[in-house]
Image 1 (cartoon, rainbow, N blue to C red):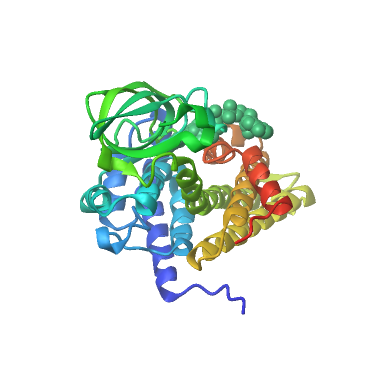
Image 2 (image 1 turned 90 degrees about the horizontal axis):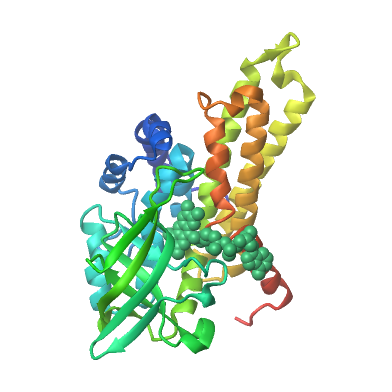
Length: 382
Ligand SMILES: Cc1cc2nc3c(=O)[nH]c(=O)nc-3n(C[C@H](O)[C@H](O)[C@H](O)COP(=O)(O)OP(=O)(O)OC[C@H]3O[C@@H](n4cnc5c(N)ncnc54)[C@H](O)[C@@H]3O)c2cc1C
């Protein structure tokens, strides 16, 4: 049976998230975008109404929402503002490896922290010389007694300036490539310096920083899972988070599509609304196809995850297609607005700038294609 009907609970969640996006996010989104200021007030409200930490296990104070419901929320939040949405959602990226591999004590302490108050955590994987090629990372963790000592630099870390703890990936066996990486939970502390806040093209309300670990002491108990198994943990995390990122891309695309469709009915040229010109109708038609097709692929990847079916292929397909579609749809939305689309008084140029990051973070569109090709050509036996 194939059923696209949402449950009453999912419909309620969608309505709640949509109202939040409309009333709490959109009115401040363009201001935060303009000055790159930090939307703490929106984050606090999102936490209060239960729109953060969607998948945290109820054992640690979370709601343990299924991934499909999470996607429904994330689409609405990104429709409101994907910059603020990225900061609201980033805890999920930091928390997933802890849920997957952390000790009971670590889970209670660090996941509990996120459910008790609107605290933030960051996922620190990327380094200046190791982006797509994670195995090239240089950050080192050396065991000394009952502690690990961390040294190294990370870049592009979402919420890094505001995080209370970090999920950090570091080499414990530097000669073993991806098999020499371990993951740790690291408390915010003096040995961690924030080197630079990035001034970004889009998603300007989210916080993105470079940071350095200078002889940072981490209790051995904060190792997540086993030593040298961090790469696998990171890949399992991304299988869980890519449906959410794909949903954000759908939300951005839908926002731009709706704005373009409305504008095309109002703007008159050659004596008729531009929606009467077939060239504009075809742009709008293709936008609607891309939004709906991206959502279906995204929901499939979340549904597979919820039902214990491997979603490595579908989550990469969803992220690739939704991200590239968001870029196309938002670019076409600017086209529908003509010259006004290029001006900041109108909403669509922000959607276009925000869409670009969807093709970059959590694995670029090229890296998604590599994953998809590997899964198609050399499927793993499950
Ligand atoms: C706003 C923002 C927020 C981010 N948040 C986080 C975060 O919270 N935590 C975190 O750890 N990271 C984060 N990142 C990092 C992000 O995941 C990386 O930027 C991304 O993985 C790409 O790495 P890179 O920038 O080093 O690009 P590179 O890996 O240098 O890639 C450059 C280009 O080469 C292509 N390329 C690379 N290798 C191949 C290949 N084998 N075949 C074909 N093409 C290839 C890429 O697709 C890309 O087009 C963030 C980045 C940004 C910009």
